[in-house]
Image (cartoon, rainbow, N blue to C red; front, side, top):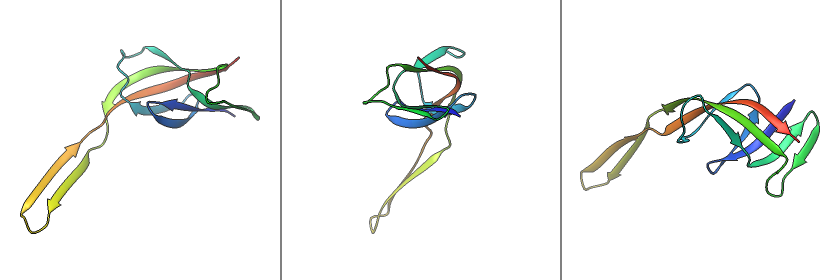
Length: 105
């Protein structure tokens, strides 16, 4: 099984080929190829490579499928005994990326 742990926009993801992941918004066009080069760990059928902090020999190739918005999160603030209430909603902008290949040199 081939997988990699990649850092994207300040978060770490366990990535496998053929699957798609929802990441924070990446400002590029649809159907465009992207290269993820901040690979922290890679597993090539039992051979584990660990970076210090990143692996220079491993690249992850993906394709942007769509831009979407996440589920709504409700933010509710209330001050007791003051009759002050504030209700807000937030939807995060996301990008869906299909992982096509994990290339280990």
